[in-house]
Length: 472
Image (cartoon, rainbow, N blue to C red; front, side, top):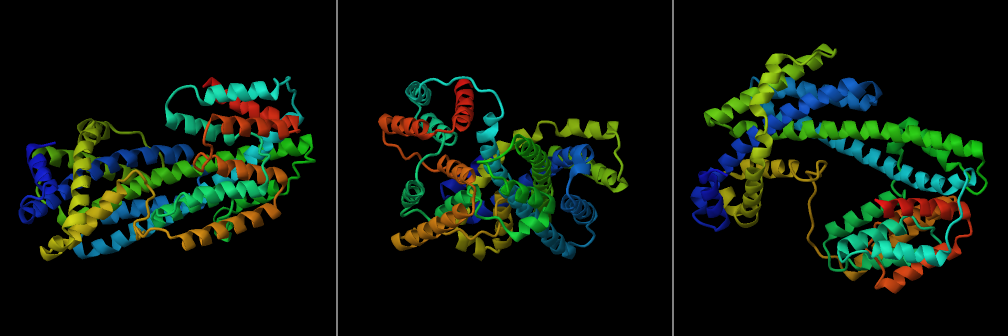
């Protein structure tokens, strides 16, 4: 951190001379984000070009459409912008692209959650067709599992192991007991913010296959068709041929989802950096010679990759591009500590000086910087339009949400194969907070699950996975 930034940052945090320090801080933040995003876009753009030529033939049509749109914004909105008044239209375009990519990733994630359910179910019938060795006595197995869970004093690790084990053990609890676990976990959120409740419920719904929609079918008809074939399986009477066909179908789906999700991550990286540069554009000015060289080198790479994309054929990296990479090597890592300071300062200004920022005519730059801060948050797909609510959840609101969720789960179970129902239970129970109070309750649950499971193929498959976890 430079002495100047350190001084201004400390003054901001200590509320010293805000009228003087805030405008200077906002200007410095804009310049730093601009350089940071230019370097990152150059790196991500090159990576995307390589991935495009390695895997692009397997991308869906929507991904090809997005990369064309992104290349167009890079060419016309970043590199070739002639009139400042046109900037807003490119910001609008990149925002629409980002929303589409975010929605696409959400659909892919829901399909991935869906596949996890069928993967669980197929795994539980696999050993009907494969040789099994004899398992130990249930009580001995339970003791081994318990030793694994409580090996150590790290409570976070212990809780994670409990949830991992619950997610693999045969599910033999009643639906009502399952609903009680879900209800209890939600009741723990009494007094939490509405945002926290909504996020938790959204997470549970995804893991329980409650958010499947027509949009998913329209976006990925091939995946939807595979889903429908898997839903037709009767796991109680499944034949070897049906199992093998379903396993092959599942593998094809996993491979498709891996390609698609990787591409969405590549595209969101491009979009977030490009979005940042467009938001910074109205406010950037003179920078140091070193920082200007870094920007110029990064922009050269961006322009070269953009030209390469326009030719629609793969080209070797020129020595000119490689020399520019040398100029920006390590810059991103060097700047990350400064970026953290700017994020902290922006949060402080937004929380304590919104009216002052407005009175100084700095509201627009502040708005842009807050969006940029979100664009560089840990959540690449963060909703930029989300109006967060700190309002605490009251008892009646919580009761209504619980009733609604339980009702939807009940409807889902009515139309599902029993193995799918158990898979959903396992896939949600290992996501909720640990509901055991002591070692004895954990032991009782493990032993109960093993004792009540009379399907040896299911028990064997579950223990194969748990033993593999214990060996890691």
